[in-house]
Image (cartoon, rainbow, N blue to C red):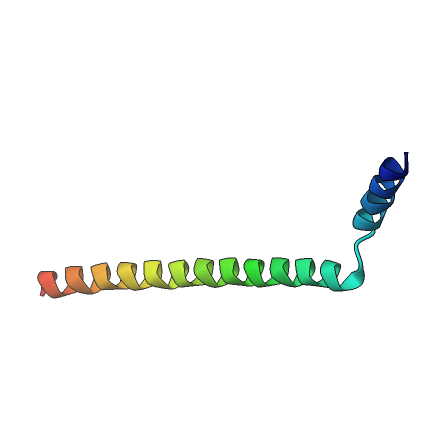
Length: 63
């Protein structure tokens, strides 16, 4: 009986996680979203560079 009471208490305390843990989780989420944004912008830049390169190549061939 005592074991089920401690499990219930643990589950309740885990549901209301202490702030340091909650802060770590939110920090990890922020970092991950920043990385994703950075990768997306890099992809856009590389696509733009590739498009610019193709345009330059066509321009050079037409001359």
